[in-house]
Amino acid sequence: QVQLVESGGGLVQAGGSLRLSCAASGRTFSSYAMGWFRQAPDKEREFVAGISVSGVITYYGNSVKGRFTISRDIAKNTVYLQMNSLKPEDTAVYYCAASGRVVPTAAPKTYGYWGQGTQVTVSS
Image (cartoon, rainbow, N blue to C red; front, side, top):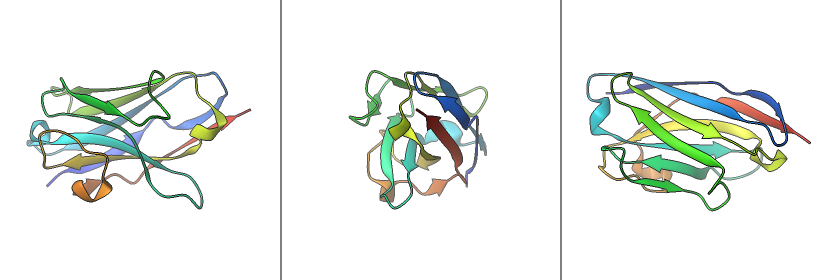
């Protein structure tokens, strides 16, 4: 079992940056592909980024490509989401998730473990 705790959210002006962290418990963290999703009010949960078990393969949602970077530190049991050039439309609750697959997918149903979320608000 994996427990996930996100941190690093907050209020930032458009054009600014934030780095989200997701700390995982459990000795099998390195066996899970990891993903970041976000959900804005009255919208469906949206795939943001994913990273494979090895850390070599990464995927991004079209709306964040070139601005966000996902990474993982196996030694620290932590996944990061570096967010640059933030826009007001990036405002949402951001969730970290763990998948039993080797390679991440964009489908929330393939992730068995979720964090509680962290709020990101980008002002114009």
